[in-house]
Length: 368
Image 1 (spheres, rainbow, N blue to C red):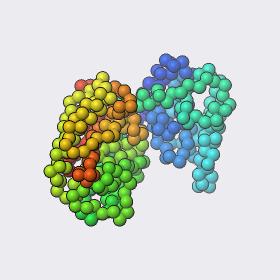
Image 2: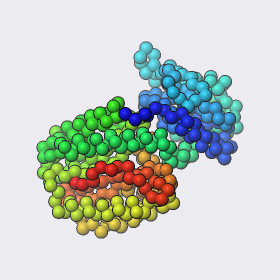
Image 3: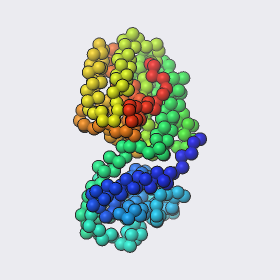
Image 4: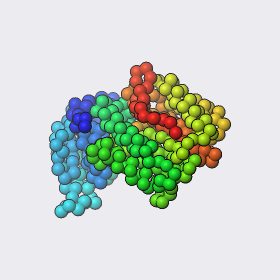
């Protein structure tokens, strides 16, 4: 297996980009409490039931507060711990314990003028003792996360490799009578085998003859149906998200014709996307292509960014007006749905935006 160890130099590079924004925003300190942002800056991926924190000072010093024990590798100048468990039982007051450990490491609640925090998760255990102007840095952090570093891309590519193994398994077993829960179980096993470890997330759609949803126990696939699989496993915190539609038996002429329109949409996407292209404009262009299909409607987003969260920027969606940037990873998922298609199809590819176009990351079969 490839080396997926924490890249300390890459983490330090991300810290420097945050420091550059701190200078612009005139921030003395940034405190992050979301697991994703702690991983982004310091490297370790903590499980969802822990509540770590990290503080980045304007002089470049990063303090990491880890649950229970210090990680073997971290891009931090100081690592302190808090007791997340007592006698193997998880504490419910971890945030308080983490906050106390952080402020003890900083020599008490910091006496700063302007403090950058995540508004959605910066609670009273941290904010209560402070006399500082709080500035929401979540938009800044989400913006910085759009462009992926090589270590992040390696994790995303491995997550995508998990989906490739899952689709190989699906194509081997999908036939009339196979149940959704059996397919689901086999696909989870395939991804774990590919990763050589537990997934840190899974998803999304596992229903046959349906636009999507969780697998149903005892529901068998029927001849003539289309089986939409929209898979989003995460490897060490970084998500893939791509879909394939598999015909339970030989595709009908109507189903194959709808598939051709989906392929036309992909040709347009791959020809048009480059840095500076409007994601909203791309949505409308693909909507126009799919509106020409004689059967089926397209009535959901065209795609979104992927990374430490399943849906990130850029948003290929009429409700946002994002612009594609070099170095970001995104999905494109055109679909067509109608009862005559039983019940329709969605096919989704993952891409990396390059200097002059896109690199397709999901290079496995698209056929029904």
